[in-house]
Amino acid sequence: MSSLAILILTKNEEDNIVDVVKNAKKCTPEVLVIDSGSTDKTVELAQAHGAKVCFRAWTDDFAAQRNFALTQTDADWVLYLDADERLNEELIAAVRQVIEDGSMDKQYALTRKSVAFGTTFNHGVLYPDHVARFFPRNRVKWVNKVHEHPECDLPLERLPGHIEHHTYKDWHHWEEKLCLYTTIWAEDAYKRGKRTTKGGIFLHSLGGFFKMFVLRAGFLDGWMGTYMCCNHFFYTMLKYLKLHELQQKKGK
Image 1 (tube, one colour):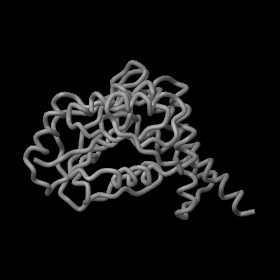
Image 2 (tube, rainbow, N blue to C red; image 1 turned 60 degrees about the horizontal axis):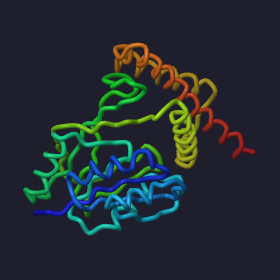
Image 3 (cartoon, helix red, strand yellow; image 1 turned 90 degrees about the vertical axis):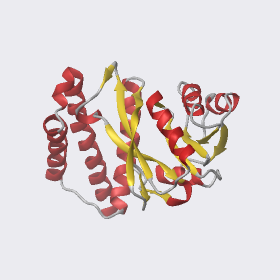
Image 4 (tube, one colour; image 1 turned 120 degrees about the vertical axis):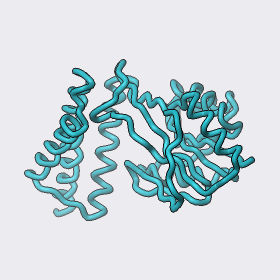
């Protein structure tokens, strides 16, 4: 039978860390927390519930954190979980089966359903997605600072079951993520040579809203789904406003 490590990135996740470690322990005894400088009880609670904790300073680079995690284990397989995610029982059974089978010729995608503000979303901005998270350890690397993604040359297969993603604790938490992700995106986009205009800012924002409200049918999730589509207009606008601001500053 192969070995598995579940890797969890954290910073100030004391509200989530106990539940996610307990959830991960249903799959494997090796749960590894990569902490980027928590000032709350995240580290203490993780260790108290049997997780190994490693530290890497935050550098505004999610891919770097995930790649660092790969160097901290010798397990045959790695599965990435965020602190606000939980594997359901069907998915836990499927993960165990992969490990027991021992074959290492595939990577696996997991279905993720978002839960926020009392709503389980099935459309729009937070519609269920499929994320590649489960790999033979020596066959994957991560790229991009924000909205990072894995690169793995193995065939991709989807496992049954799903992850519950408790994405926002409250609107303050949503605002914090909005500010963080838009800033990182703009800085990374500028470095990659992406540029925009004032007209482009509006068109990208309108296009983002149309994609979420119409193409992904965000309105089917009721007033909260509609509201999140409006928020996506603002999120997209803020990304490109920050990019435009960088252009002006760097140009001078």
